[in-house]
Image (cartoon, rainbow, N blue to C red):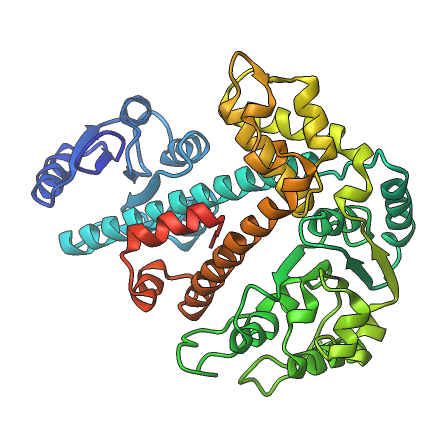
Length: 463
């Protein structure tokens, strides 16, 4: 607290017996008192020590106590001011409250009453500081998100991606549902961000839910929300992502992984524009723009029943297929430039230059993991870059292999990736069951908490 182990209390009162009494009382209760007899002396002390609490008499000899209150409130808004006065008129109390006083107490007062009031003032100050800290953190995160989104503006050098962006620019300002189709890693989420930015609901929230990231019995609560007591563990009301998306965009990634019975319920939301949280008897109206995505071939998903046909028709107001990276190699050099710049800034390194051989290897690789795999490869290369240069030696092994051997390397990597996906899914399920409580999730998984933290960092899991 301002570099002191004890909260600082400044007392401004022109009556010396009161100052002596309060000084002894404050010391006895573990506070650090600073005493002043006049308004000007009090302001000087307050500015010097920046106290947590000020005990201020209104009837001071040189200036009204209200003047002191106004200046303290303006210069040190987190400092709590308790007014001490023999004049307990209602008008004084109202005026002091309007000027930011924490409380108004009339003389004479019981010592225990004043000590209790100081304790409440300190709690109020702590709450205000925490609120301000959270507000600053939120603003920092908002700026970071805006910066990240600017960095994630999709690259469109190829004719096929220019056509995709042309479609997005035409459909984004409408209220039409959009279904994004494409392999994993092609940038569906980035395009969903772009649709939201260009839409009429850009001032509203963009809420994202990956339907493959939650076990079937958890998605319903995440999407629709629930009332307190709806099920074991529902210790408080949770609005759900449909409610959070009101006035904005709801992005449902991997929509074909949503359980079929839940698809029926969600279809009703799209039709009726209302829903009912789990355990609630009230129907809630809602209005949002829907963007959905899937990496499955859409005809196969509908035919197999993974995606209900009636929901597909509702989603398919506007369908945008996104080509894989191997079919738009003209985009690769621009993406490389984007990622090299980003990871160089993150690592605090000069941007390395790619040799012709390294660039050719990146352009000619088949990229089964699409843009996500390219991004990881560039990060790998920037970390290993020697003499500010990226050669084929700094690229992941499979990229530098002859084309005939790439397929085998990709198949081997795919097996490892499947195991990694399974591990990630298991951790996500444990976190969903515990509503993000890492300690409980680690207990469910039978591992130590530091081990869980390490796995989450490696797998890119954030709560």
